[in-house]
Length: 72
Image 1 (cartoon, rainbow, N blue to C red):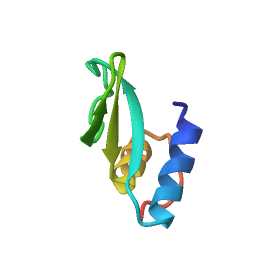
Image 2: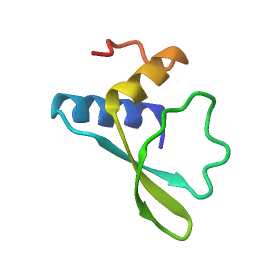
Image 3: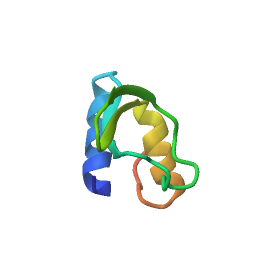
Image 4: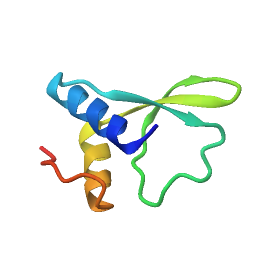
């Protein structure tokens, strides 16, 4: 998922007061440093679906200078 799509989905989930789901490759060993932990929803042969708190995703993106919006 590209950064712009991740930002859009996180902002939409935040506005709807919901968690967001991301599909990540399996195994997710090369996750970026400090990437938030999420809740495992589904295990697939090549990927996992994980639920995240959108505030944490936006805060991580902001910390890495990938988001210039306001993290509520």
